[in-house]
Amino acid sequence: MPDLTTLANVKAYAQITDNTSDAVLSRLISAFSAWFLNQINRGALIESTYTEQRNGQGGDSLTTIYYPIQSITSLTVDGQTIPASDGVTPGYWADSFSVFLSGCYRFCKGRGNVKLVYSAGYPSVPLDVEQAVIDQVVLTARRQPNLGTVSQQMNGITTVAFSQKDLAPGVSAVIENYKSKTVVGW
Image (cartoon, rainbow, N blue to C red):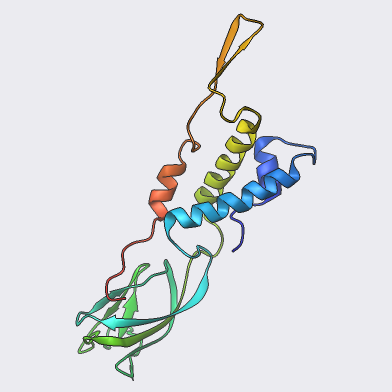
């Protein structure tokens, strides 16, 4: 699985100019990229081709596992190829998340009777996702020397408290925005 940001972008954001922390930062980038994809319960964000064998539910719409849908290569229901609709003739059309049938076509009830081949995902990592990973990497890297420390006294006079939050600000909101939807008829 590819990383959701680069070492160069993390270093630029954190204003790090030397190479002493490259190994740690690279490890954190990979770890938080995998963690982010796990949190959103999606196998991938970057555009790829997928084949889904699904159960027909009898309706005229089907929500795909991967999104946003970029294009549909083929759609068959009960072995019958469904043509693309041009808006006038019956067939299929899609928005970012679902495939719709028009005219007399339906996703007939059946087990594994719908086969959809399509391209979905983002052409590149969305900027808010990349920034969330960068923020989390930088927060963790900067906390590293103080992990587990709640406060410190310096020279018996000054008390310094450290944040105990696990996530950088805004990361939770980005996760919620990209979280996978429940798919019916799988």
